Image (tube, rainbow, N blue to C red; front, side, top):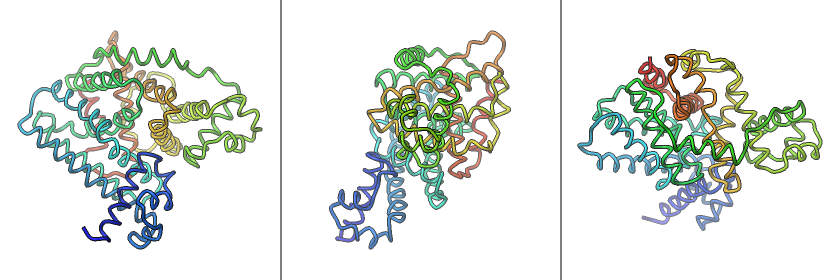
Length: 388
């Protein structure tokens, strides 16, 4: 490798490492050049600027990820079995990707996040999603569930985004296995697969961090301002002072209602969640009324902000309690809609709600990234048809 190739490779490696450490919002030319131990001017010489460096780094990370996916496929040569067997494999792959390929997992998350705001990154985002299809399609075909590949891709995206959020390692891993077993139950037309580990996690998270009570008008105003701040400025721009300015309140009032940065993030998350699910109503409307909706006016900025907030929580140890809430208290709306389409007396578990939430998350992220892949947006309907 000549000096030019060495310099380029060091810069690309520095960006990929920084995606895991600080995210795109924290990356600067000076930081990247310092990590690569070469002059800042080299960025402009080799890539024309930071945008060029970031897009090349996204492609480099994708090449590494595609090599990993191909290696896993080779290890699975000759593998086949039932949906339950496949579910074990799916859970193991989600865990291995998030734990042992964590740097690449962050690169994927950052690329998808940036592409939601910057169309110039959509081609590489499309390539990332295509790589997931290229990985899962032949495996699903061998297990006789090729028509469900889109649902697997959506679940892999949705669940890996949350499995990157660490809480208690053994319980986290068990909960992923339960979620994938629930997916296998849906394949066979069943809801209510037992999920004792996820149930335990929900109980522990609620006990350690009680649900936010009803807010008065001022608190609601501040929380909504926090949500707008994340949507407009990103998580890095969420400070007590910026929220006070957005809310038209004094810094003292904001600090009194939400004392810590974690409290403020939690309020922003709750406000974003309420905004996202508001169009779905409060009753048990059938889920098929909302699954196929390709655009839900007014909440795209909230969805983007919610995804960015989840990614930030996975990275920052100071947000550990808040991260647990993000991971295990999801599915509160999804479970209501599942109950609405289930036979009377059917027991729907927390894992069923979490599964539908993960599928919705994958679908929403693909839409916001401008992904156009055959069958992808029908992946949820295909699974729900199994329950009908």
